[in-house]
Length: 476
Image (cartoon, rainbow, N blue to C red; front, side):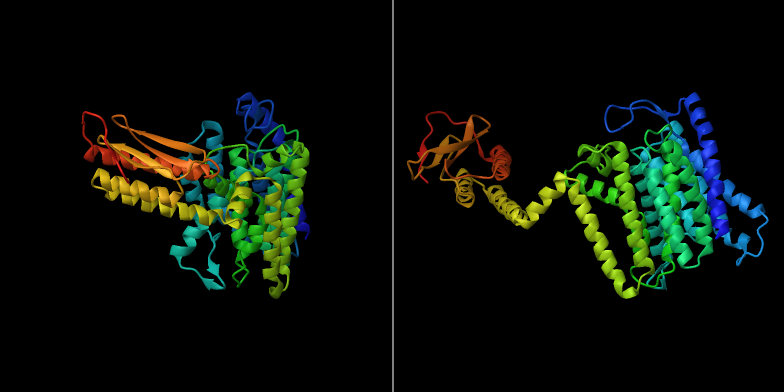
């Protein structure tokens, strides 16, 4: 409709004209993002706060629509724009959180508190995950789900804002997808609040695409992700099926996939979940030899594909919705595999080749071995536990010096062997022997030696003593 074009065009022009002034002012005040020779890809300081121009353009477009002399509209314009007015306090809150962080560098928990507050405000304004399969959800379920969704969307856009034009372009594709879906369902409220966001982002991309002269900043990325999350929640209200939320999820596939991949790979490597690194999706594309511009265009193409899937799932026959979701998940999995993440490749090999079951078996056997050593109350019982451990883990023999007594299980073969020696307090020790041609996984060897040393040191504090004279040898 003409009014949607007008809203998008006004937001586009204001963003296009205003962004250079925001850029110059940020440079003057030194509100810039400086390169760190690490995960940041730009070579010179770049002003942030690009979200200011987008926010002003968005609000101005909605405001002008109220005073424009539109006639014969098939809907009540002020009533249709009521959704945007109700969302305004929450949007201002999330924008303020990002702006303060851009200027003063808030701590993570402070940003999270502000995001949660904005999400609660959006929920009370009607922008929440309110139903499931057509049934109204109780507040104690819908409110936490809404907060999780909106905070996740806001941070997802913020997370991918690491390459020129990426976050703004992803936001543009998601906005256009949401607007098209709104039109197919004749939801003018959703279409009217989405169109100016798409226009403002397109105008901003003139200065943000590679080589960028201004960045979104947290005020921009958090605001865009938050608004898209709110629009996605409204989009899901139309569905009475369990798949109602999948279409908005697909529309935001790239940023949400980035969040999931980052969390899983850091978990697999036992790294802090919120630790910054150079292993994001766009970094992996750069590592494969793509330029920044080409990497962004590839991700734009992925956004277009995700938009197609989301619209097919949204407007297609219900009997095909499940198939669309399955095809989308398969496409996403193939895409992640082509990024070359070693964590996922190794995890897949562990699961498919049975290594996971082997490691579980080793851990259980180690627990039994440790338990046997822990229960030993005398040197003789310690030796019995050592002998049992030798048999369990495939050692050919062992020698233990404890409390002046040598316990030894001699080798039964003349073949070459290698030795694992574990020193203990007061010149005591335990040796394990294994045939040279009998391999042992390094991880298993490390875990076995660590368990033996730990348990023996604990036991020796209670059962050892000083004795003089030569150490007698005790037969097994």
